[in-house]
Image (cartoon, rainbow, N blue to C red; front, side):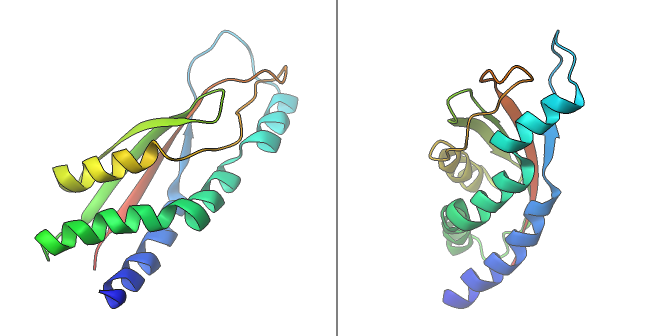
Amino acid sequence: MLRNLLIVAALLVPALAHAEFIKKASSDVRTPSSAKVAAETLSVEGMLAKINSTYMLGMQRCYVKGLSQDNSLAGTVTVVFTVNPWGRVTGMVTGIAPKVDACLSNQLTTWRFPSPRDAKDRPKAATFKINLLLRQ
């Protein structure tokens, strides 16, 4: 079991590097200074670091639980989540198996990040997409 967990950890961490910020259409025009403000409050790098250091164990537990029911369980999951103006996360995970996807989606509700900010330093929502490769 520990061997599987270590393998999963080694495989999941590099997969998180493929996160992308999903820009929603808005009426305000973003300037270079607004990007600087957003990076100081919630950056992709900071978000990935927190996922790797704080939230990865919960995600690994979901995958290991799935492996206990199906030893051949492997594939890519897509994690799409929104960080609201208060730093709370809502989202959905899809792609591998319904029970594992549901467990991973449930993990998202425990995540917290710094408040995303707009160009005028007002709290706003930010949406992200991460693809994770899950395999033994």
